[in-house]
Image 1 (cartoon, rainbow, N blue to C red):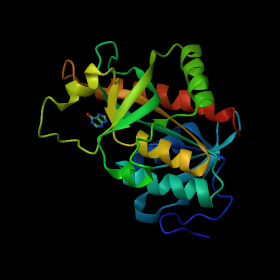
Image 2: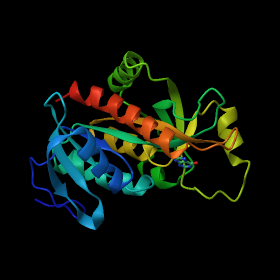
Image 3: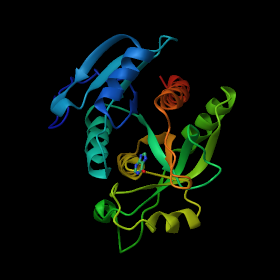
Image 4: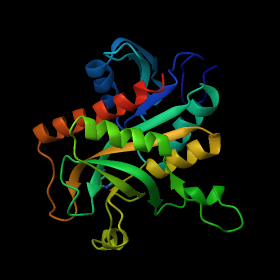
Length: 239
Ligand code: HPA
């Protein structure tokens, strides 16, 4: 049963998987928000866990690594070989808009990209739009609102470049209304669309391109907890 990148058995994953980029964050989510946890995969240290939420709903959390190819591989294997129906990315992002403050939650309605990774899926020279699942998007907004977390719905850009040699390239995306930059949503959304499955991306603003600020360690922790709680509220509706 194991795939090239996941050494779990069929049935080890729940139908819904939360997906942070960082394997240590996957472990932190499992340790902090789940009980009766089992580690189900650890190939390349890309840890995955399955456990029960406080409301005894069975969900999984697995890391994606960084970038479109990495999340593309793991999400493809989960959707196509492990019976996973929904993946919710939980990550951090850099804000491009002044109304998107540090610690706010960005709910990705769509993802743009500067990557060439999607070229392999394009037909007749067209451009494939990467969108989140509408039902998951609406549920995410309702969950964030119900808990009083400030959130913004809109497009993110999933960039291949963290250390951009051009200090102004973000301004182009910002002028087109893109809310924030991260590195994986586009890959996840296309993977779900290809597989006939559902995906969502919920990100905490960890830094701002507007005022060059970053979250303090304490603010980061609160922001991450709010994001994970929102994602769990949505996940619990589907298991
Ligand atoms: N760039 C890309 N990904 C990110 C950033 C960023 O500035 N901040 C958080 N994730």
